[in-house]
Image (cartoon, rainbow, N blue to C red; front, side, top):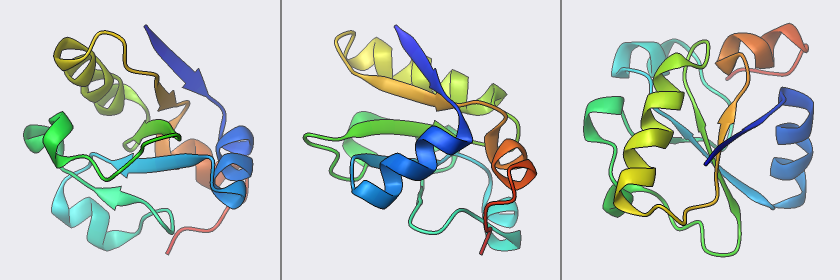
Length: 103
């Protein structure tokens, strides 16, 4: 099951080291700005073997507005149906609307 998380909740998780964030946008979007600490795996390359180590942490997927990252969650769940995975509500746009930094 794909869970969702709000930007405020994700910020807390990242600050406490409880989550790993993966940005699935394209290279040009990533280069234009991303959430600090996020890993970058474009949607076309999403698979469990390309994910950063998330053992013991929440795995959160993120894109521009939430659509592609939801697709990425579904792709990973097909590989491991027991995966505990989250989609960032509103993507990086939602993050920015909360006033959080993009680097």
